[in-house]
Length: 466
Image 1: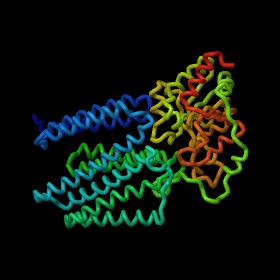
Image 2: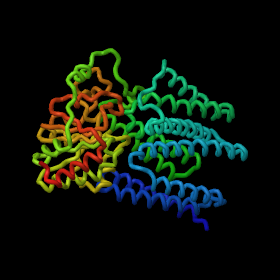
Image 3: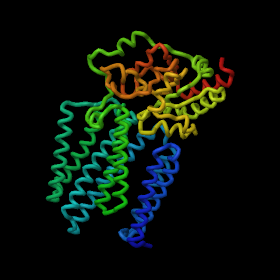
Image 4: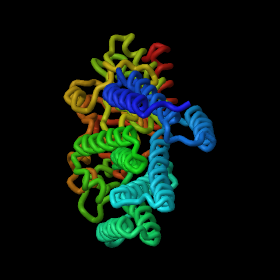
């Protein structure tokens, strides 16, 4: 059964409205669940309207793809850990990019055979291939860095910016030539250069910038989808692609502001390696040594504190300690100790990573505060418990002008009366920068798995503390 063009247009309009409402819902943790449901409803309507559209001539390959994708997606959704979510997002971005490339090439071959090519369509095909190829290879590199297959440190090479500029210019020039001449040679070379450009753009990006890169690649995938929409003359795909493209770009800009860095500095610079021979406060701080503490020491200070602030980081995600954090919060609040969670915009490996984990543990939204809201409260807190966070609490960003992360706004945990850092080892954070917080007089490190430490704190509190 097929539906009329007008009915399909109305269905697409409803889907587009639902997608806009879904984005609005995702702007706050309290409405995020509703936003997801609205987005899923919009996608279901869009898929149904497309499947029953007049342009569909056969359902065989479509059903095979839908069933195969549904099986793979279901298995991934059931097995994926929250700690692996950033690399899954990067992998999904790569699929969108490759889809844009394949659709553009397939459209070119089909239209050329039917003698239906024109200048506008050829321009759309060139744009779709270039954007899609950059998205694919860039997302693959991001996946490799997040998964640990590739080093999280910047991989730089001689004449990096000049090489990238030359590749970009050559790819665009070949795209123009392809659009004008329908040359297969130009098509192949343009596609290869775009794949290479995605690789050379992302490989120099350091681990500390990876949340921004994930967001930026999300934007790229949106533009790739929009380009595919133009190619297929699908209005909804154009709308959805534009929504994703613009929202990803805006999110990248917001995150860069939170890091006090320009988007161009992230894309073409990256940080994450130690500085060269410049004098650093790190060298002096190391001489002072590091204090370690036991679980009982932290509990001693927390159970009688006027306020406890918990700073979650990627270490909490790795240990899946969010539920233990919820129980710790409940034990402290039962003793009339207020507990708040401090969230840095780039904590974790993707935007909103910590918010998702805390929401999963049903930690009330009122207890979760963003950086600008919570920073004034650190100086009035008796205890700050840093759980697996590193770069986002590193005073080097404020005090060490030679540090690669200098200028990045941080959670000012070091201003509290007592700071306890739960950490597996003395290894630096994902950016590779030594953390000066560990050497402050008011800071002690509790070495161990975040979940084990948190559960130990809960057990100690239940046993009567000190």
